Structures are given as C-alpha cells and as structure tokens.
Image 1 (cartoon, rainbow, N blue to C red):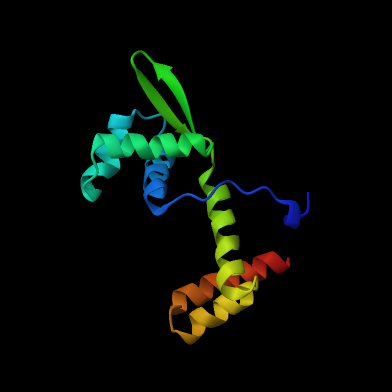
Image 2 (image 1 turned 45 degrees about the vertical axis):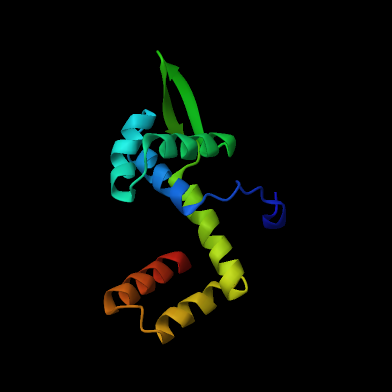
Length: 129
C-alpha cells in the first residue's frame, strides 16, 4: 500500500488523547480507573470520561471487554503508530510535507538545545548506516 493509499484512523481529540495516554500507560482499565487517572486534573466527571471512552470505541481506537457489570477498556491503537501518524499530519499540514522545513523552523526559533542537536546528529548518523 503506498503512502497515498494509507488508511489513517479517525482523528483523536486532545481530550481523547488524555484518555489514550492513561490506557497506554496501563490497560485494561475500567472507566472509573481512567477517571481517577485523568479526570481529577481536568475537572472531568465519570460521565465525561465514559463519553470519551465511547467515542474512542466508535473510532476503533479502544476495545471493550465485559467484566461483570462493568467494562474493561484497552487500546487498539498503539502509541507509536499514533505518534507516527500525527507527526506525518503535522509535517504535511504545517511544513508542506517536508521534515527539513520543520527542523529549519525549530533551529531558527532557537527551540533546539545543544543536547537536541547532538541527538539529531546521532540519529542522522545512525540512519545513514
């Protein structure tokens, strides 16, 4: 399948991403456990977390499994796959699909530290092998 034919999962909102981070950190979890992990910091009720989980199930990013009278939630979407897809979207949307333009922007805005530059140089060296 070429990159033009690549199937991308439906976009995940910032709020849904917070729920995914909880599930990527530990799964399976109940809705109440997810709410304990992310709801308090954001002022979300259990009902809000359940709504976000339902949306993620509909987007096929999360699976449910019955556990008595409750459900257990597990991610279907791997974090690395999500990060890869979102990174590509960012570069396409903001930098015309050119990663070099992203790095140039970061360098010009002084957003890269010496440590960042060293890591990038090491990565490039490894990629060229």
